[in-house]
Image (cartoon, rainbow, N blue to C red):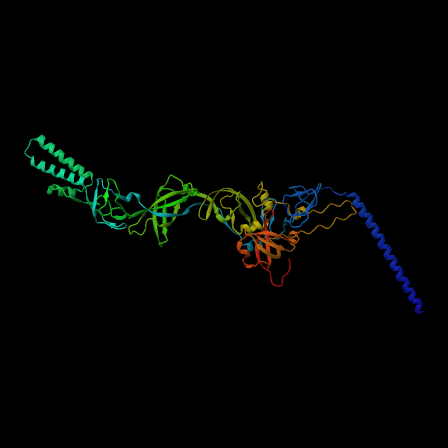
Length: 562
């Protein structure tokens, strides 16, 4: 009985196996027929060329690898076009999702309100205001040329005695400087004395004789005055009636008190007519000459107020007024000298001192302005992000005018009252790359060319017949402000870039490789050592240029990405 039951079980198992094999064979054959049918209806596409896998403008007619060992991507006929839409996404293409930054069809950038708060976005209203500006330049203290006096006798002679014996000494108006002996001076004195005595002796003579003698006396007196002989000395000479061998030469012709800047006079030396023996300057008022750069000189006007500070007196500013804008330009420095007059009653300002000068210049009236921090300047164009609604921004190309301390004039692109982003605008730029938004502005955008995103590029193929199901549509990867990766810091290059060997970057479909990156800030590499494991975050600033925005040493137990 038991043997009979066993045989029945064996027969049933064999039948089941045979039925399963037959079903599997039939399904495989049917599937093969369908596959063959589809393959026959889908002829192989012709490969036009192979493009660089990193999105660089480099193609090849045959398969090849780039410098990092990545295979070039084939471009098929009727598919991917040079510079056009790509069916296969570049490794640098980014995607957008509802939770991240996305570009709307109208050229706007949308970011979730939560993301805006995390980024610390701040806005300010574009408004009309007077665009005042402070020009900061370096100057130097100089002597007022109008208060410099040269002591130069008009006759030949010898110095017998010095009363002021060194440079730097203060002198008073009318103070004696030195005594001189001059044969010419003695002869002129004697002539004048004789003429004066003759006039007195001929007081009873006829009119013509007295007139002739008086003319001789007047001519002798005029000669002495032309030699800068003082009135007091002339009177003494007329009273005494005798010529003096030496004559004290006074500084009476110096209009004010001052100091001796230069002294060439020495006791016993001979001097010639016109030779400068002393140079005296009044320092109660001095000049400050400042060199203003060419681009700012148009704002400086005569009468503009200035504040001068010196290292010797850091807590004591000096007030001055611009008295002259020189008509010449220094070709070497492209600066224009500007002169300011500064009162110096206590003599604190010394000639040749260096000074820090702040010149206050007024604008040309109320103009439309935005904060300087609101402008993203690429060098070829300027962009301002205008907030249309919470989380919705529009990039605008603007034309700028004059700049102030904290604000800049906007000539075109923004209207009065519109809210502009003044903080975290670079992060918004990195979040969305502004690719689709800036493409609406026309031309090659300042932030780099834009390629269609991976979501736009990877469209599912259409079914070839009603019996074949389309392949599953690939899921788009969420975009991020930056792409995170792990690797090893190999070197910090002389140009400020870093060389990193990193592992695969899933958000970019990158394999592991070694490449150079630009640092958004040179201090980012300060907390990592050469050869250490790191984690970092990158964004694409422009095609092919990847910038590290965050870098830190990886935990000790982390070995991913090596």
